[in-house]
Image (cartoon, helix red, strand yellow):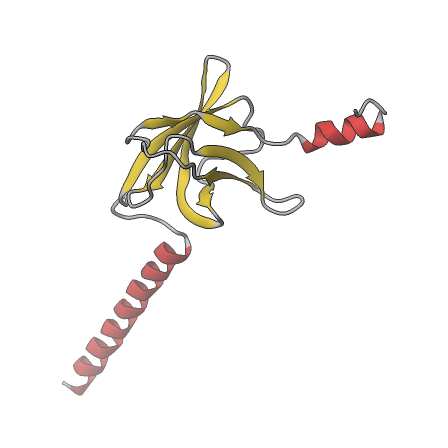
Length: 147
């Protein structure tokens, strides 16, 4: 009888440990089980060199969403972003692709505008700035054709 109680206690302890590990994996991996509460927003860029699906979308350094997909549309890159529902984007918001650090990963930075009109769900950010082609700039500088 005593052995059955010890085995039950050990089994519950192991089960609790597995549940805690699963919870930590979800939190540290930034996974979303229920999908979250996001609004889709599109932006078209001339070049999205180095930008990948799943990177963060930020306003003033605060993470407000992520890049859901990148597709080609009429020779331009259409970036679908999922922005948290509480974030209000004005019609004249500027989306730009930035680099984290000198050789870091790319992310999308949103600079809010001053318009009274808001971008609707599944709307489009009209003002965009493509990523700076650092390799091209260095090549131009080395070969002496920099202006």
